[in-house]
Length: 351
Ligand SMILES: Cc1ncc(COP(=O)(O)O)c(C=O)c1O
Image (cartoon, rainbow, N blue to C red; front, side, top):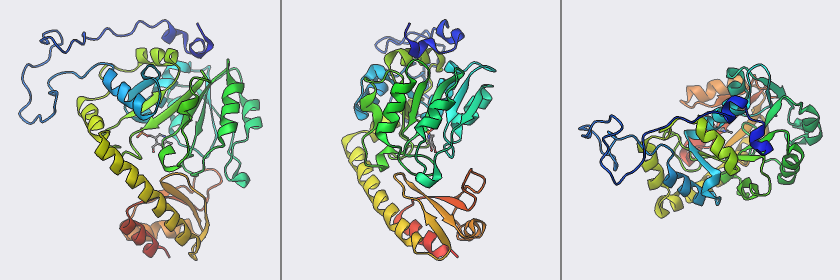
């Protein structure tokens, strides 16, 4: 057994996966206790009276094509949140193991670890260096308990991309010790290559992608975990059979047809140009102290009085994210880029 599965929980390594009903679409299904008729309201292609494919192969293959990876390296799941949950439950033993995170960053890595009863080690990003990684401090903090190291690039909520060569050096340095999980939820807005191309060279690298952001499918709940096929096989024992619903599978296939895909790419381009317009307008605003450069679909903005800015937005009917309790961000709000009209409204609402 190689180290990438050898560091997983012993119970998961020896787990006998649930034996789901056989998937043989050519035959009449009298083996899964389903109703033979569709519900009156069912407009799906396949029929919601039937369970979906337990581990949807065609979906994984389509996602692999989208992310330019091998199908054996892809696990389709209910958003990257489920990918984080699966990694946590498979690799962290309660009371013994830990994750390493780099705050300020996406909250789910730590929440999932705490739910599991695992530890959370923090190595802050360096604010004075534009929230860059501190690779030396990070490696020094990797104790034998650390099984997962999470990086987010572009990072939520700071918006910056982490240096690719630094991330790959970390992947190499962590080999044999911990998986390096790089969350690329926002990479489409960065106009930079994904780390998916590096999976073959770094067996301990895991990349998280999602259809929630650039593809506009947050409500469908679909993401992908990309990793070495051995890690994928291990996680398939833990993911629920039928995790991705038939409605979601069909929605994803429709969204990834050439026409919708081209539209999604046009919208990413529009969003990126709106991000730059909004950043420039905010930077010139009296109530704004600092607009951090962003490679994502949001801006991290520090105000002279974030509470007042938050109230003005709310009064104008706009919800923005309050980050005042995040480390180093006492006067910061996170503003998602909206349509040009919404962005104008946001600018007009500020004190
Ligand atoms: C960095 C990051 N990762 C993952 C997620 C969750 O994405 P999903 O909708 O794929 O579960 C988010 C959601 O905001 C996020 O910001």
